[in-house]
Image 1 (cartoon, rainbow, N blue to C red):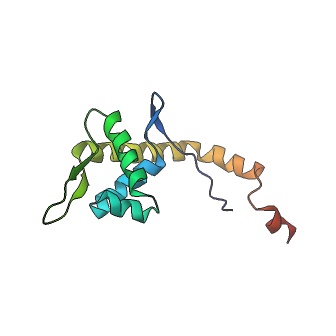
Image 2: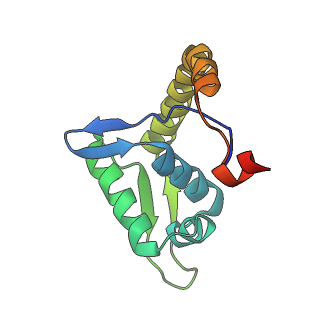
Length: 123
């Protein structure tokens, strides 16, 4: 078990997670790879799961976060839209602020938590 403790920020719209750590990671990989399927592979996730996450995000905001192009002679692809870039930038800024604000509390939690497995404590 790792002793890296951190809060996890999720932005909800009703019951849907509009964006959270996993979706932000998926957006970063889509930006880097230019493909939902390549991003999914990087995250050891099925294409279907990645597509469902993208679909949820695209429906939670006023404009889609990910744009796609269908196949053809040069193949398809995916990219972050202007809205996608904006949401990812804002989410990452919020994450940084939350981590900084909560750092003292996380330090106190660390003192109160068992950060090793029972097997590690026995040795």
